[in-house]
Length: 130
Figure 1 (cartoon, one colour):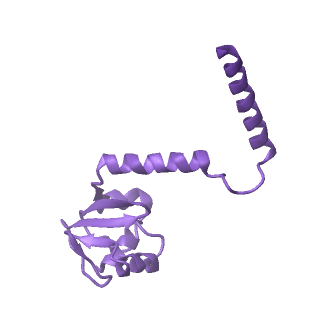
Figure 2 (cartoon, helix red, strand yellow):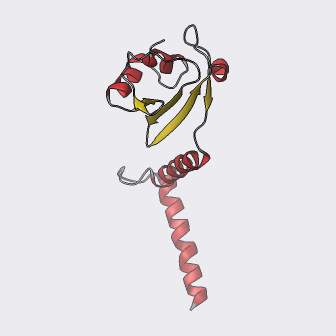
Figure 3 (tube, helix red, strand yellow):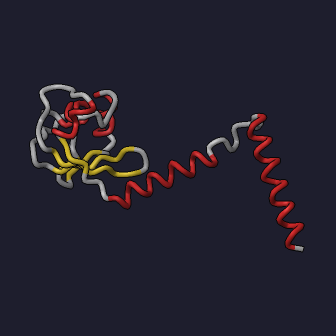
């Protein structure tokens, strides 16, 4: 099976076109070598896919007959991404959620109230320290 089709079948990419684009941008490696979208993939091969800011590592267990449901994906691949990399991704997500609204213009009423409460708490703490 072609690598772009395999990546789409195991739901690493939403569309086959996105999987093919990742191959064109040299973001997919098979056993350490850059893979073109037409490259055949076989069981037992190690894939390295750059998606968002990190590289996911996947071991090919079997080739699916066609696109499979999310519950069946683990029969065809094994995620071997190091835990440190996944932890970095989680830290990035937390940072974006905490500061994601910065620069989006005027704060909402809830944001303004939260900011006011935070300022009052810190002013009280400063007053107690003096």
